[in-house]
Length: 98
Image (cartoon, rainbow, N blue to C red; front, side, top):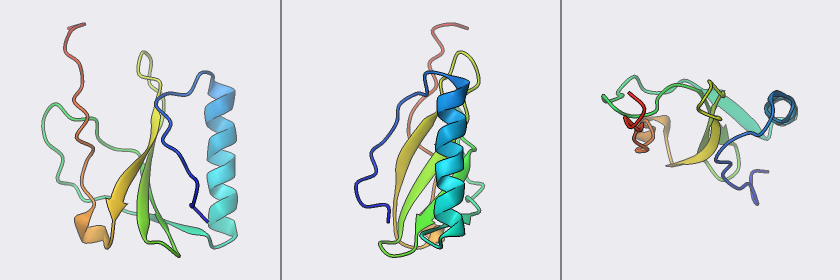
């Protein structure tokens, strides 16, 4: 059950990210969560992509984005309800380093 999951704002090592991926895969195998396809309605300047999951019991959606240096990846709550409501994160990509 996803109850108690907390958002992760960056993985500190590749091993930490892989361990989390292994955990999510075990949750899929147990039928606790299902992987879903995201909507392709992303907007310029937003972090997009990743893998989307729905908690079978609560219908909460979560998104996992892999690290891509210097971005450290994330695990975030993506809303609740049907996949029609799933949209890209509203976190803006910093342009300070461009």
